[in-house]
Image (tube, rainbow, N blue to C red; front, side):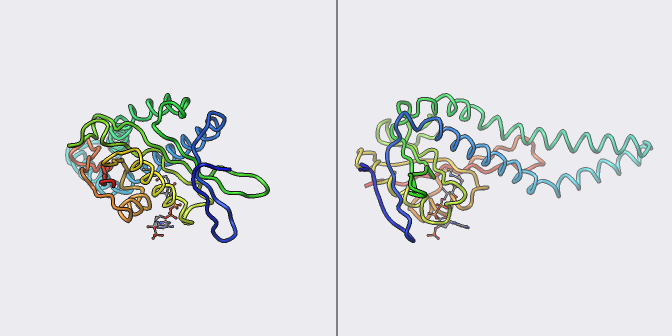
Length: 238
Ligand SMILES: CC(C)(COP(=O)(O)OP(=O)(O)OC[C@H]1O[C@@H](n2cnc3c(N)ncnc32)[C@H](O)[C@@H]1OP(=O)(O)O)[C@@H](O)C(=O)NCCC(=O)NCCS
């Protein structure tokens, strides 16, 4: 018996239940893997947003150096150096924005059953056993994200992820709705989360489920290059 939620879709049995200590190492692998994929998406997003600007800047630098009279090989080395330095600085600025969160997360996930207010896993029954395919958790919101609510009135949604093979089957929506209903039962008045714009599926899912963008933070530290937009989204409960 499972104390969470059970349902069947297309002949598959699914369930959501609370994490227990035996699940932690497998769940840690799932969530950390997902986190690194999100980081990769963000770095890819930085590249896609900035490659045109980098080409224009390289062209301008090359023209300037040609006018000054530098040799082609020095111009090439300088332009390559400039491009790498700008790209690296932009990426590091994004990483620094998330580094404290990643460090805290890696520490907390080891004791996920204690450090999170609630931690749920979703499973599918396949080949005679329950396989873990998704996660969602509630946590105390970081100071940075608190808004007009008092501590204890607002909770933070974390670790929402579904394994790639099981996406687009409403598992994410089920986890989200379940987390919202449980947070309401726990008497929270609002729920907050952070998501980067490079996760359009997640942003769309949150919007469809009543979340609105409260703040947009941009990780850019250089005026010429774009950073990543981090959305702080929230919705009222109850
Ligand atoms: C975000 C995530 C949890 C969604 O899980 P999922 O099980 O695929 O979601 P659902 O099937 O419930 O779909 C939810 C909504 O996402 C969008 N969506 C789902 N699959 C999509 C696809 N292939 N393309 C575009 N949008 C899609 C739709 O808006 C959908 O709602 P709709 O079917 O009512 O139109 C999953 O994609 C994931 O794990 N992503 C990586 C981790 C992540 O981004 N987590 C969020 C961190 S804050």
